[in-house]
Image 1: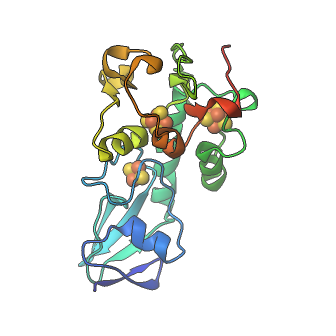
Image 2 (image 1 turned 45 degrees about the vertical axis):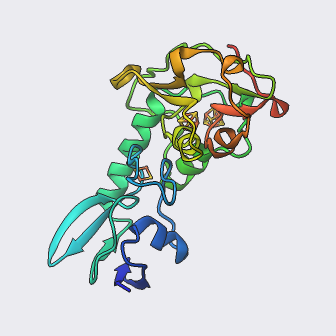
Length: 219
Ligand code: SF4
Ligand code: SF4
Ligand code: FES
């Protein structure tokens, strides 16, 4: 069982365990958005879980959700460099986010609001102009709604659907155009999905939400 330190605190980890899960299990919070425990390889898309590690006198930046613990590793979660890079990562995520919390179904349980608070940054990036796209809301399904303008491309819905042996949701396009959608952009109501709703449950934003929670903002 490897032993290592996080911010000077000695931690025991399972062999091969990633820094993020060992930290959370030990009550040490590291910001994260896209990580799903047990999904291999980790997606590593949000970059919010950056930490600095030191092994054999060498320091480097790694993502805690993808870096396995190593014996004698020293992990630093709050260096000035780590906090600066996390803030940049968060600003990039929010730069194309349609921020309209008062009309959002997740306004009382939004991971982005929690992250902004823990990173001590505003939700709306000050240094970047808004790149939010005017993508159409898919309100066709009787149970849930998909608002792609609030999707942060964390992939949680995609990987959750795939882990159940399905692929009703997937990434389409690349770069700035990248989005989560159905095959051929078909309306949700037309896909033959069992509506297990696990994708809705894992979505950390107001992109996928139950109709009963309301919050459709067509503006
Ligand atoms: S997901 Fe909704 S509540 Fe969260 S920041 Fe975006 S608009 Fe606000
Ligand atoms: S719809 Fe939700 S869970 Fe899926 S990628 Fe977008 S933000 Fe993540
Ligand atoms: S949680 Fe590690 S990169 Fe997103």
